[in-house]
Structures are given as C-alpha cells and as structure tokens.
Length: 211
Image 1 (cartoon, rainbow, N blue to C red):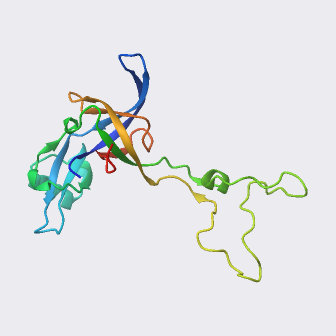
Image 2: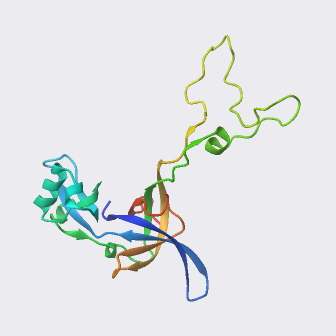
Image 3: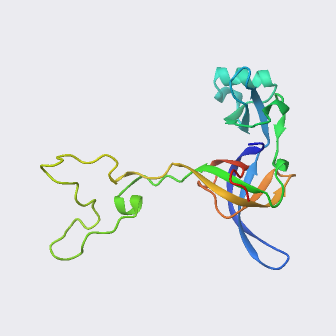
C-alpha cells in the first residue's frame, strides 16, 4: 500500500454530473494526518507510518502518547493509527498527509466500524426465517428453533447462530470511486455508502484489488 488516510464520516449527499446524472456520495473529512512515527524493516521488521487524527486537549492524552506527539513536534490528537506503507521511508516526523494524495476517479477501499444495534434476535442478526405461525407453534415464532438432539450430542454445536450483540464490526467496502477531492477543506466525496454512523472514524486506502 502506497497511500491511505484516516478520516471522519460526515454523512451522505448527492452530486450531479454534467450530463445530469445523480451520484450518491459519502462525505469524508480526510486528514490532515501528521506522522507520529516511521517504522522500517531494519528496526521494526516491517514498513509503516503511524499517523494521528482529530486534535485533542493535552490533558486528555496519556503520558506515553504525549511524549510521542512531543517527539514528532505536533499537537496532541485523539486517534492514532498505523498504516502499512511500502514507501514509509519517504515520510518524516511531523509531515502531514492530506486529502490531496487522492485524485478524482481513484479506486479506494474504505474500512470502518458498523453501527451498533444492541442485543438482537436471530432474525435480525442472522436473517433467519420465522417459525410456523400455525399448527401449535407458539408463542415462539421468532426464537432460535431446535438446538439439537437430547441424547446425541447432548450439547449445542459451536458456531450455532444465536441471539446476541449485533453490529460494531470492522467492515471493508472495496473498489469505491473518489468522485471529488476538496483540498481546501480536506474533504473526499466517495461514491456510495461506507460503514459506520455519522462521526465515526474510517480509513480510506488505495484499492487492493485494482480497478
């Protein structure tokens, strides 16, 4: 990977092409992301850069991260993320990565955390069908169903679809298109939707699977 940036999902809107075609886009505040640390093969065994995003009050940052920010000569930030760049040696401490690393028409992958939906049943969580609504079935129409035989195996098999916490999962949407880059406001307009609610942190990186 040669380019990526950390940003914040601001919401969705739409833009019009010169031909009058409506394109739904997600607005992402991308950077600026100053470099906190540069890792290389000699000292760390792999190539990467550690970047920061979203400024934070100094008193809300712990001492180890405060020291790292001070060493890089930058302000204190809320989020820190490692990006596996092949060309990490080209970056220096304190250098800012901005939205202008992308251009209109670029294909990107967007990584985010999905919206949390709390405790849900198997119908919403796993897309299972209801049980029969007649013939004596009830009132358990939305329950899991059979757990297995009593005598053999006398247990519930591992990985069986069950009710539980749904959402808050890391999800990657691949091969999305950059519709517009606003370098003045560090904003990317990405075609389509991306994971997470408004205000969530996402990573926009160059597409791994090409065009």
